[in-house]
Length: 80
Image 1 (spheres, one colour):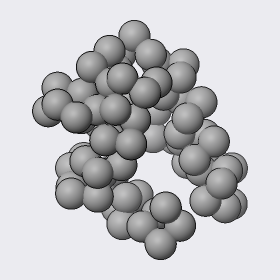
Image 2: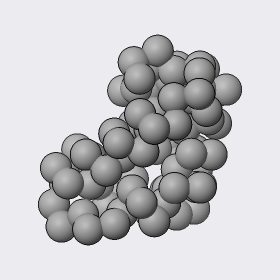
Image 3: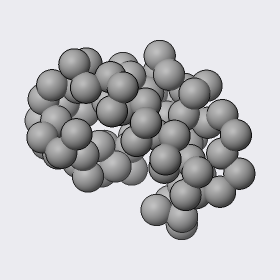
Image 4: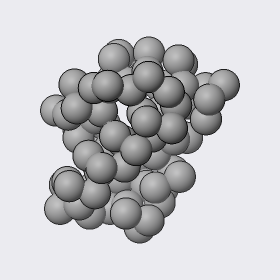
């Protein structure tokens, strides 16, 4: 994750990308619908995901917290 974090952040800002799709699959979002759900949450919660994230570990914790808090919005993902 650490080596791909900058690319994932760029793709998050753009709203699409290969690495962002691959990242979503780690959460069980295999379908296009699941990936779209993660992208929608990412877009609406971008500031919270990136807030006070001085390390990759903090950033991942923020992302996990946001995804967990939005389980109903990512219903097509199996590992949340």
